[in-house]
Length: 311
Image (cartoon, rainbow, N blue to C red; front, side, top):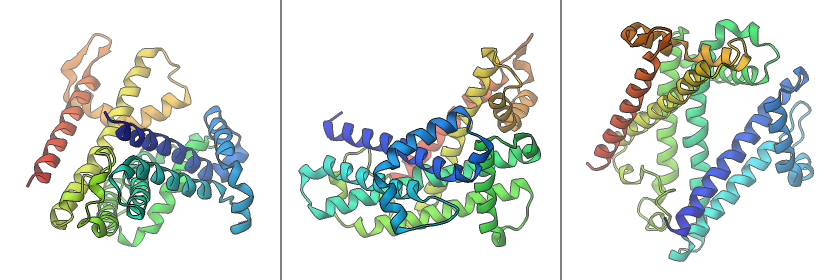
């Protein structure tokens, strides 16, 4: 791995971490009067250190009575800084201002394609699973934030929903998010499709979509496959955590364990129903079989994406 690849990977990881902290801090503001659990307090303390240099400036530019926009102001600064680091990793190939423009564009594009769009899809799914138990989580800042974001998004697209049944809502959200990401990729990357500047960047930050920009009809299913893969990866991680907590001796009434169990329940029920043979005594290996299947499906999706890209 070259130094430029290492710089790009570290910039991506650090940028994603700071963005997640700032987004959580911004959306948690209306719910802080319920108190702050250890995680929310940690994020709040970290966000204060990140936002400190920008608080005076941001509050002078935009003032709202019910919401402090400093975390979003700091988020934009973080994305610009990450873009400059991307440009620095490719500056040896020349390109001047164009390198900086592409670096900043990639940084902002990653905000949507890596975090916001898959995150909204996952939040909608999680909110659907927790919807029947919302009263049990009054005072849980994370769950209340999740429900608030999901509710606002569903209201935003309510005219495009043909049913409010959970399955139909999830499918509709998946389709709309895929279309939005498809249009976003075309709008941001198409201007650079005929330029050689993009090839100057390390492979770690080069979008996989570049070769498909001239074939938007193929790009759309690729975007949908990737979004689906990101969702399955999230489910894989949650199921793995759920399986580990069941073996760890964690209090089954712990709030984290309860939330995790509710979110994973459809997948656990499915695995126990179809892989009932995997239960040996008090030990149930059915979830482990489902994990292997999800891992295999993700590998197949990656293979399909590579084959599509090679057309």
